[in-house]
Amino acid sequence: MATLTGITDGPAVDQEWNLATPFLECLVRLIRAQDTHGTWEGKSDADLLADFIVTKEQRREIPIIGDPDPDVLWRLQNFYSCVGLVIEERTGLLASPIMTISHEGFGRVLFSTGRLVVLSRTLRDAHRFGFETLGKLSESGTKMVEDAIAVIETYPDVARA
Figure 1 (spheres, one colour):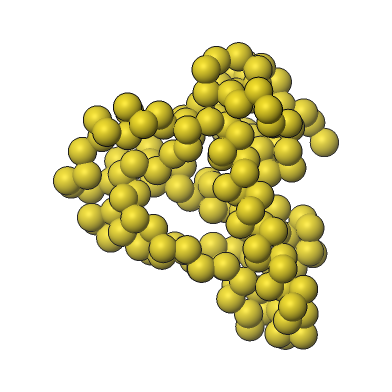
Figure 2: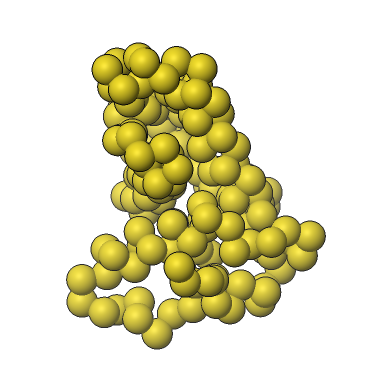
């Protein structure tokens, strides 16, 4: 498995974190897989993940009136797809996100495996989706994966049904 490159550069990196986590590595793989023309080939992993970093100042400047920006929707889709992929890697069970977002930026994400809903999240202010640091991005994704796996382990028969 590849390790993250160029990840220690920039103010958004939380130095206390080991940022070469399975979640961030999966997110980078997912983003690179979407690069069908090789546009991002020369970019470091940190540059690819930089879109997910939104500081408090940047968040305040983002208007919440109007449709969510397509780039924000792309980040949301990639983030939750990555959560599903890491769940699959760890459990061997298919866990795909079902996401609905209104034009106002509110919605819900559900992950199901077999007949079991393993994760449910309410989306609010999708216009402002992002994380303060790469460490917080990793922590959030990893926590969702851990929560989903705990549900699968609690109800394994339903998850495999």
